[in-house]
Amino acid sequence: MKQEDVSTFLAIVETRSISKAAEKLFLSQAAVSQRLKSLEKEIGVTLIERKKGFKTVQLTSYGNQFIDIAERWSALCQETEEMKNKSGRMSMTIACNDSLATYMPLFKYIAKEEPGIDLDIRTLDSGEIYDLVEKREADAGLLLNVISSAQVDIKPILRESYVIISKFDIAGDRKEVSADDMDPEKEIVLQWGPEYMRWRETLKIHPFSPHVRVNRMSMIIDFLDEPETWAIVPRTVADHFASQTDINVLELKGGPPDRESCLIVHVNPRSTQQKAIDMFTVYLKHYLAGIGGSTNI
Image (cartoon, rainbow, N blue to C red; front, side):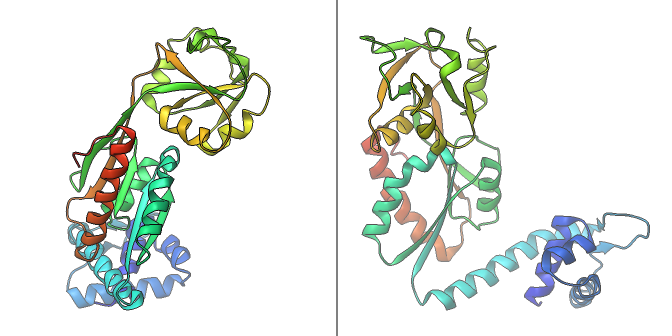
């Protein structure tokens, strides 16, 4: 089979359209149709039902069965190209949620200690991370929201509480405060997850609009420059910010359920990547031991 024909089939599956697949691949519709016909002729079955008047294509039963074969074929071709291009160097792709970018000290340490390995670090949403790991386009994922998947091995690695942070003295002599004691008009809010948001709904301050809403962890620290502003963050995020600037960290009384982060890897990773995954797991264990995480991974 030709890789270009297999890639074209997968593009049609993803877009459910010949025309959209052509746009995705920067080809003409005629070229996409020709590649599909060539693939069907080679394997001897019809993969796509061709019906006039329908905006989306339908897969035949053979087409549905062939998706897994096509994905594995594509992955093998990718591995072959990587083997040729890397000249024996290892590589590893790690995908993580934005708020888990606090693992950056770990990534930097690996890059320093393992100059022979090329790291590709990506910050993505949980669904995108699962998708990459399931397709074996990412070797490991660090994320918060667990999604059931038969193709992915999920390992809890850290449970952590939430704290309140501010660049100003907002609590006097108190070392522990309740969110309801704070001024909601000065709060910087990031939605840390479903459990966190359900907890927020129980607060007296919940009906009030926060001062600022953000969707990236890195944005919080800049907004805290305004007088009396504050934010609720996981403890590792507070530690991360504290390493960059002066902040006050207050214990949160009656806070939300602890946040749990997980490591995910494919149950059957690419054989060429197993050594890199094993190496990453060793470094991750040492890092977790230093921040109170689980080393049973």
